[in-house]
Length: 258
Image 1 (cartoon, helix red, strand yellow):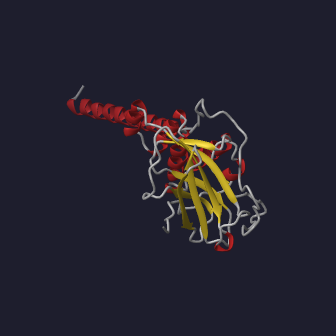
Image 2 (cartoon, rainbow, N blue to C red):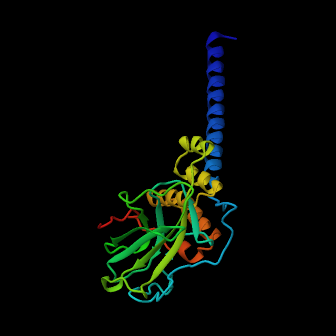
Image 3 (cartoon, rainbow, N blue to C red):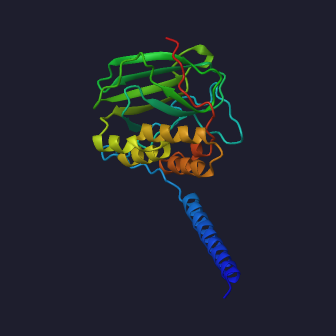
């Protein structure tokens, strides 16, 4: 065989090998991408053993219609985003609560909480600034921090006509601060936002579970997988109606006036 024929055949063989490897690599990459796309992390909330279902106070406790507007043919009441036990754990000294707030003419809400002995602990008036939808409320930083191991009862009342009255729409719940276990803390260090929500859910820490997931949904509003994960989490704890309500883009802490 002549040298030029040998070189020609060698080039053809090399080119064929290159294309074969390219096709294999492309096929492998596509399969891996599809596998990653089809994999969706689910946030499953596992209630702690101490939080057995009890009689709950869902939505507004009194006169839900006063100064609240009924819209979109579905009247979802003033609702705290809590499990059916109406209580949740947190690891934060100043945690964040989430609520569904219908459109209202009220401009302020009255927020208060106290310890298990019903002693007055803290109260404040907070401006709504025209907000409605799923909103967040963070315990004011200047308020005393929640103590680890203590359970607190909180209440949030809508101040119709800027007055606090016995028939104001109101929701209530309980919250307990627990210590962040070292094993969970180590896992959270390398976790992204969604993975953190998964870890909090498995540990039964409700408030960090839902607020962390909410932040992910707000940050990526076009992500259908996140939206589905959000709906599944709320539905799993008895919040089917609220699960259909979109998260407002401006989910953030409200500011205390005091």
